[in-house]
Amino acid sequence: MSSNILFKESNDTTISDLVRRYSQRTYGVSYSFVRNKEDAEDIVQEVFTEVSSSLHKFLGKSSVSTWIYRITISKSIDFLRRKKRKKRFGLVRKIFEVEKVSNLIRDSEKTPEEILIAGERNQALHIALNELAESQRVALVLKFFQEFSQKEIAEVMNLSESAVESLLQRGKKNLEKKLFKYFNKTIT
Image 1: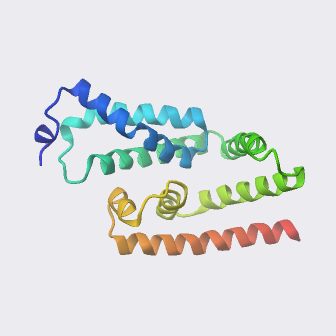
Image 2: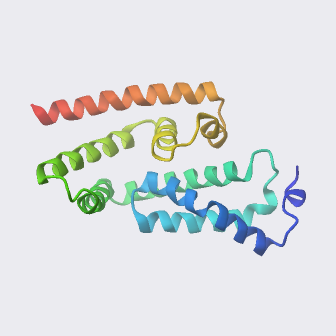
């Protein structure tokens, strides 16, 4: 199906409809990677700018949502690479400061010790996730942070469902090893 057949409406209406329909989940996917509200919002804008300028190239070989999520993942990973080059560990500190504040607000009924432990676990998880191979990290983020089905992940990553299952299994195993090493270092 060609994009001309798929999108008969005017481009402005089509883009508006796509933004309305997919911006919230696009934001969620992006936020799962960058862990910062403003950066995720910027990425969403970049995504829909690219969608708007590339709409005529869309061939309909996948669903529109799959195409948009692929762009989102690509933009999010590119953003992280740029950030990493600029300031390797600054992003990690920034992520956890934002998360600590939101956790404090959300978990106001917990004791300070429980909040501290939860924050440390959250920090360890995100550090370990960022150390995984990119494909494993993408699969795990989509599955466990965004609750995509294996079929949806396969479509977004352009892989078979069995390849996604393998990525998820290896990713969980590698994540477990990294977390075990982290907590083992922390305890000793």
